[in-house]
Image (cartoon, rainbow, N blue to C red; front, side):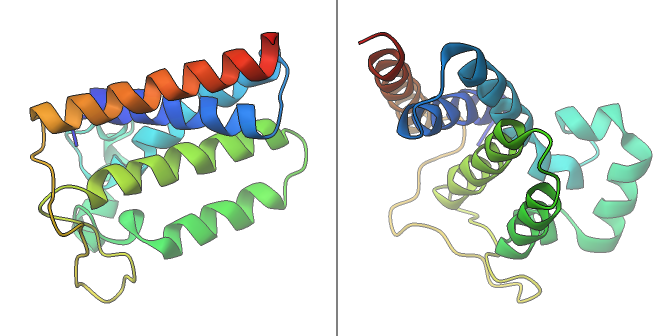
Length: 160
């Protein structure tokens, strides 16, 4: 999935999450912001990615040690992130948003032909049986549907 699609997918997923837990508008905006950041975070293992370019020394090390779509695209990374965020109760909305965004990224890459190594360090990559081409029409449609669903649910949860 492309970075722009991950951002849309992360924002839409965070909006859905904020609607499910009935957050007020201000908290929903915070959760969506965190969801967008979380949706880009797994690609820190790629020096050319959005985060990779911002903190390239860290990205380069992660890339050399684990490769792209390695540990950062696994359930182990999600568990580690959740542990770090749950142990910090200062901003639970931010933590939930980061995790939702991170999971949306993994789901987005799960539906591509390459897939993701869910059970890293096992290198086997998993993907859906009929994957969607990266940058293709299906990817754009799916991201749009998730975003519209998120806006609809959040709107109804907040204003209706």
